[in-house]
Length: 84
Figure 1 (cartoon, rainbow, N blue to C red):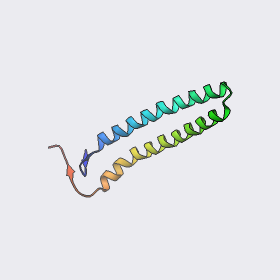
Figure 2 (tube, rainbow, N blue to C red):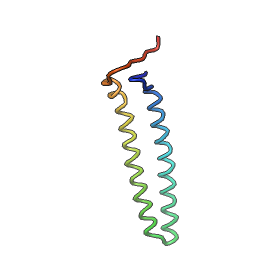
Figure 3 (cartoon, helix red, strand yellow):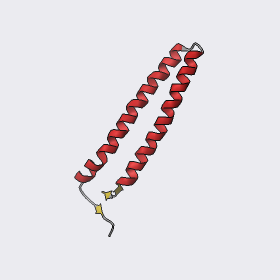
Figure 4 (cartoon, one colour):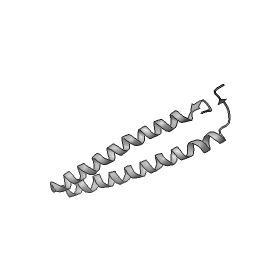
């Protein structure tokens, strides 16, 4: 469905793609944090774990954005495009 010139299906797909990138980055940070800690770099590991937690927050916000697509599309003024 398109609303205000935006294909909401594509918008959702693109947000999910960004989430996939965040998921991979989060996992890499987690692994790197443990590598740093195992090598005695406790401060580095701590900072990487903090960054990992921030990625969790980013992913939660992306989920909220996906949930909001339908509500925003229903309330959008302007152009509506329908397949005929």
